[in-house]
Length: 200
Image 1: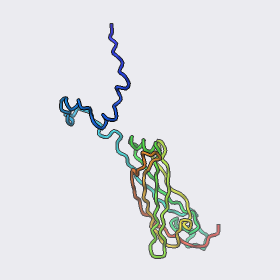
Image 2 (image 1 turned 120 degrees about the horizontal axis):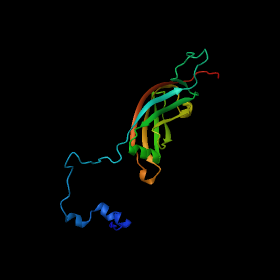
Image 3 (image 1 turned 135 degrees about the vertical axis):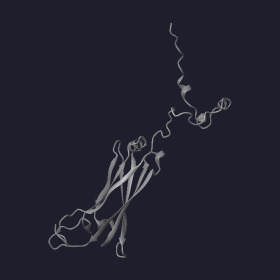
Image 4 (image 1 turned 45 degrees about the horizontal axis):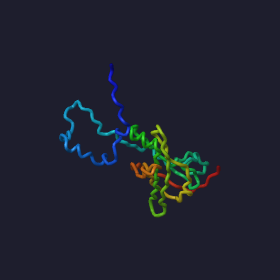
């Protein structure tokens, strides 16, 4: 006749808070604790969640007006010569790895914050920063973080500019995630901010 083993009480499986920080006294009275790995056949997970990382690509600061009238500097003007009142696309791509830790952070909803820095060359050009924030989504590992804005609305004036960007990943909306998890930098683009006639 088969023997029925007694059921383990659920409460006995839960480690008390005191035991988490300080092992029970009777543990010290037993045999010495086992050291590190003893053979190459033992399995051991040193990183339960794994590492997490991201990369930055395709920094953009380009004008969207397209061709100018015949009296412009050139009928097919470079997208990097941008009028003060012209729509300018500013942004970059952030690509994350797919480790378990990354999946967790992105699923929880982490802020992806990009600061675009316009550094004017010469005393006449201004210096301005533009902040753009995106929120991560579950199972999405590539993000376009950018916006469309006119140079004059950003406070830029005529001049030559270097454009770079710094990125902060974090924090989370949860009170336990109020930290910056990572930083990044990408640069540089060069743009000419101009003030020239245009007839749409």
